[in-house]
Figure (cartoon, rainbow, N blue to C red):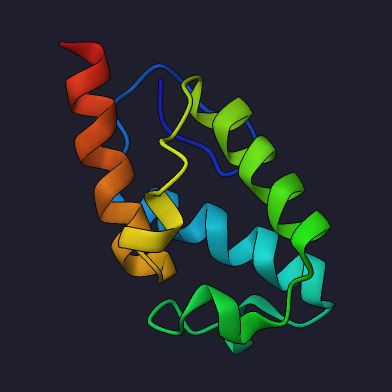
Length: 95
């Protein structure tokens, strides 16, 4: 089974797959094409309000199948950094 952006398989995630998912979700919430979302831009620069950020976090946790620590966005403040962190956490969670 392979990874998909909408529904996730049980296969291990890659940073690229997580990044693509996050870029797509942020783009949708901002009403812009995914190509306009810079994965190296800080989350707080995307102009998401706190409700949108909470919804995004919940959707991400549902997609991943595990909770992220509440400080994840603080310590990994870009899509690229958070994507790498999530893959590391998934490996720990699966072990």
